[in-house]
Image (cartoon, rainbow, N blue to C red; front, side):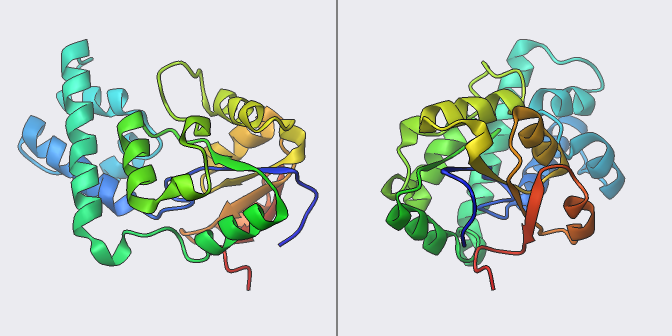
Length: 218
């Protein structure tokens, strides 16, 4: 793998770790607690995918939740998520080829980090379970600590931590919103992991230079 980039910024969920089913299961548990029933496929598409925890919880409550409710159910959802990850031992691993790509970047002296919308508890979980500190300084991982306006700001902070202009970084994403945020941040070198069969749609987006299934690059 080569290209005109001096640093790499990875999204995490859906990019380095395929975990969408775990989020669905976890939200299903929260829905049962609040409403006494799970979530439908239609609800998932319209009210859950790509939506912040607080908005999802308010949707399930049928009203705007108060701070105590939002924090309680958000933390519970992530606890369920982590439990489901650990229970699915067969699929609880980094995307195929990711470790080898990390080693390649290290060997070439190309710095990289993660910019994720996950909360700190989940980032700590990933660092511990996947041994990420072997390749990445945990303090350089950008996560949702409540201070970022959007993913654009997260990408820019990640490039600052790497000490490399965003225009000289490669961003690795898996979602349309993430790709758009990367481009808005100033990145023209976006590689996309396609786990949902949307390769043609991804290829048409500004900034996208490559669409892959995993990090084997075969």
